[in-house]
Length: 186
Length: 186
DNA sequence: ATAACCATGTAAATGGTTACATGATTAG
DNA sequence: CTAATCATGTAACCATTTACATGGTTAT
Image 1 (tube, protein in one colour):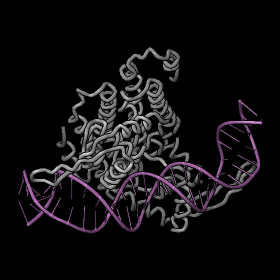
Image 2: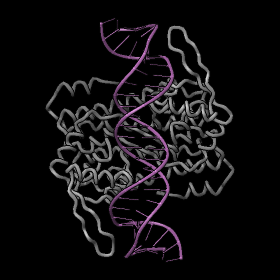
Image 3: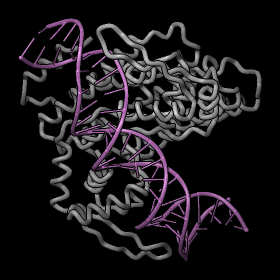
Image 4: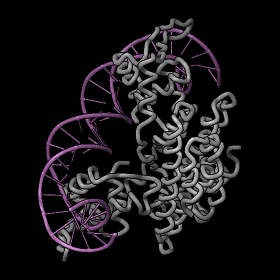
């Protein structure tokens, strides 16, 4: 599934601008299973407009730039429906941090610590975003997928936090880093 | 991190052919945090050869096609080391199945069931691959990342299996599908 | 017979990221 | 004064996927 289809999906939740859709990918309801940046969202939206799958209304705002609010058309809704009924591809995952940690024995202590902290921070951030997303009014299916994201991130965070000493091997190098780790977060 | 760097990483575990590297991504030690197909691995290997980061030896085999076995050079090892000491990018995730399930209220019962089953199958497969990968001789860091994958997949599988009724909403439609679900797997 | 596995590769097409370009407002 | 947030967009570049091309062996 490409960014175009995902934009259609985002708009099925309500009218939105490209900027707002970006936030749905970054910290909203899609954040744990899809990502997209401006460079793919804006072109996708313009292409969708040409296809007749969305309409666009320019909204002037006081004290900030005008925004383009997109709405799904019937054709757009039909296209989304069609895409949702294809054979799903396998998940794609790419993690630099897991890769670096996999080769942890090749890392110097500073990098090892930095990567480990970044990974924890990432999961903490993602978990915070999911907790800030209100799903109480959403259909059961959407709540279910939200719950999966929460379960996954909680597992990852827990695993990393409890295994810090195993992974870092009780480095004596930089006591300041250890302090930061003990102090941070929840 | 691109496929070239990951190939360097794969070769740091021992000499291998493109075909063998593919299997490391698909069902081996990298399977839960990276993926790559033939179309990116073979060109990457040839590019690495031009760069002088790997050497190649053609090995004739009885009863099967000759294979090209690649080995890391010192320059390759240095390049890997350098890549491992950059600032890691955030994780990238793309899940068609989660997306479809997120829009589960728009799916007809057959598709809803199919996607759900596919998702469970995917996690079961991945978990099986991880269990079949022997890490007993690997460095602690590699074992740690392996354990994270296991923990994550177990959580996902458990969440899906226990929530089947919540997600599928006790459809009465196709009793055969329910039987399959109850019978399958571990 | 047929499918799956072994084994490598290329060319075209797709799709996404990065960098650039612009510019007002608000909070620190 | 600086950084962040709001807001949109394009062009060049990069990487990956897909489809094609080939061909022997082994298991069902």
